[in-house]
Image (cartoon, rainbow, N blue to C red):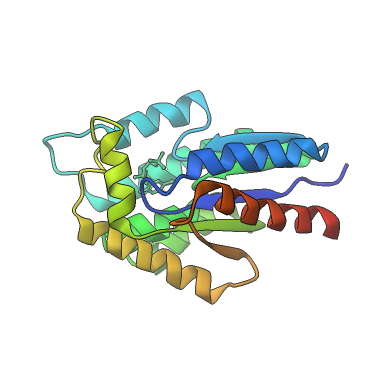
Length: 209
Ligand code: TMP
């Protein structure tokens, strides 16, 4: 059994990740690929419970290390009980966010050092990294307006524009450093154009196998 591909979708709030993941899944399924669509934090009942803890707005200040450890606790459960078994069974896994989000949000956004995050990445993942990362990139203001129109804001969505600007910049730097693994996608364009771009990359991945 050929191992599946591990593909993640990243970006700041409101860039259209969910829509694009659904389109990408459909494009792969149309080519006969078995797909698992999942998300972080979350993806298993326990990891979804940790997600709820992380996203709920609260009066108590949340220490950045508490947030960081909860992200990796959820990830350990999700990776080892859901993602890796699916990849081993030959499924392609499309994951809405993964560790790049930790580097961008807890690193770029909250200011936790890259080295600290990398220690946990190694502990939880060993050498598992996404095969391909689609970074949906758009100006922060556009996405925040979209996120706000969806209703009550979660603990992250309540952050200031400057927080998301740091997150975006961190994502862009990571993408520039590893151009083979990252596709920087201009997500400010109409969604059909964005979907066509992603589909082209997925077809190229399939053709290479
Ligand atoms: P979502 O809105 O894309 O579902 O993601 C939930 C929030 O969690 C989003 O604001 C980004 C944040 N997040 C982190 O801060 N670190 C992480 O490692 C992950 C996976 C998500």
